Length: 251
Image: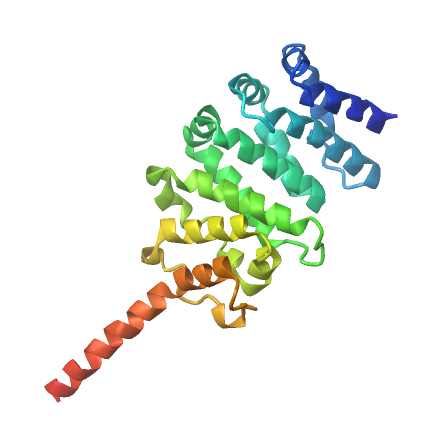
């Protein structure tokens, strides 16, 4: 019965003629209790996912009024709870909601206005990467893509980028994870941009297991990603080549 109700609410939330009335009547807040529950029981998980889908319908199209409402009603903590407790499917939708809010400048400014806010979010993203269920092949590519998008959006702020370098789990470029998203050129491109934004100065690219990646010669994005990862290593080799003759000359 509750699932049927959530489907009806999703219809109202997604339709352009009823979406704003749905918001102005504060209907989403009736779902927040389901999002805040910390139970992992199957029935609660169904409610969690169904409620997230309703909220996800609200943010599919960028609308400042929707973002204002979600920020004012503390939607961020609800999503963070789902990202911590939920299944891969619920985590995927919750992360998508966070990302869609961050795409709006008000949402990004809200997150970056206080260090504890963006550090909590990045810590939650980091935890999800570290405990990913690599066997969940159906939804994992979408979750990884949303996580990368969130990191990329936050890291576009130069002032925050330095603080983020210690919170981004570079397991994202582990061969297991790269192979999961290798079928999504957009996700690979975003990961490459993330690596480029931080650059070799952070030391993130020093010990990446590139040789274990299942590269294909005709996969352009994978090859571009590998090139970006290997840049610091190639630079070190060039430095060593220049240093060797100098050392020999001194002897």
